[in-house]
Length: 128
Image (cartoon, rainbow, N blue to C red; front, side):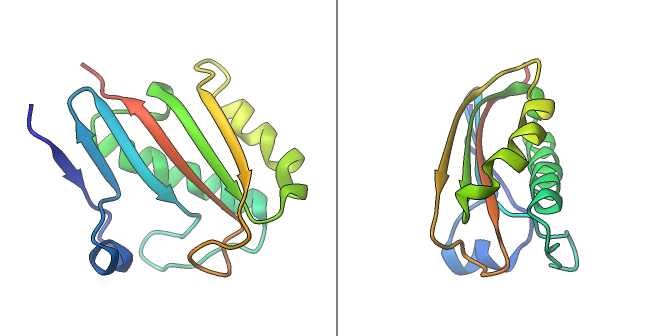
């Protein structure tokens, strides 16, 4: 099976030489995904709104790759402020209620854009 590269068309993909997602065999590897609004690049102030947008953006990329949030086996959450953990945890709990992927949540002193408060990275199985 050929390796497939998924692009969102974002400026950083070309600058950094990476793909939004890579499909390799039965696996989909989703790069760190922030809460940017597609098309405008706007970012909400609220960590809750950013988290919801991260998941929308992730779902879109996974769908392009032939997968979905329901196919997620691992998620890594990067929070600029670990005090936000208890506020965003229920969003992940609701989203992954039935699939219960492995989860690692870490504090990151900064993300690629200073407006970002959260970023997620996902590994998922490709639907057969």
